[in-house]
Length: 347
Image (cartoon, rainbow, N blue to C red; front, side, top):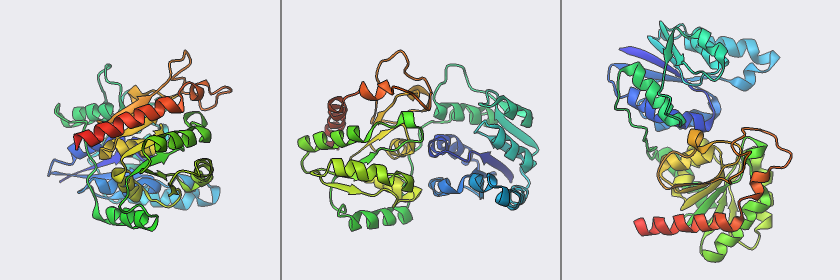
């Protein structure tokens, strides 16, 4: 039995992007696949039934002087618990490449086009993808295809329903009056300031959508750090039936709530990738990032991005954030309604 270690600690979207490739790798009955993951996203790996060990990369603890050495020792111990035939770093960063080096595998693979050039010095094998491939999902599939000698790896992977997370999602929805109601999920947060459309924009989208769909409820989703953001949006849309679920979900529960939604409205963020991977229609707002590289990968996905000379700038700070003013709530609601009506017609 060969044992393979995948290194892809974060972020939520990056982890989901690797699922199709790793799922294909797991189909070989003579291989066991383990994964190095940030504990915050570990529940997501349950959506790959049959995966081996989860090895936690505790980045926050490693960044603290008082916790670095015990945390690093624990990580090294877990990495060395099993002898790995192959270690595959799909992150392409120097720190992820170092984790692969410390794992001590016979063959250490990583992207030939690693995001951080220093990472390449930690590999003794390089993985490639054709120059015409742009999206992260397809890049991962191409690299794992080269590793395994396969050319038939499908980039499509639908997250299966997991009863334990379905139950927790059902409970949360019932507690908030959404058990038997149709709802649109709204995830207004983002990791970068420039990715995040303003609160007033999301509130306007909710109000204008409700004018066209008066029986629809709106569920606000977000991390604990985004609770104030969601609270402000709910206050602005106070005459519309909104339910604030921010800070109340784990990754597994969030996945199943998004699966239940009629649609997800969001920025370029982790929930967007969960919607695409569960088949839920998504309307996503893009400014500084490139949807051809990391956009929602799946059917029923609509990306709204203005045409500006500075678009896809990849800047985390912007003095004008002009892109946020070039997409109107009216245009966004039009896209939402089109997707909702299409979904009803397809049922």
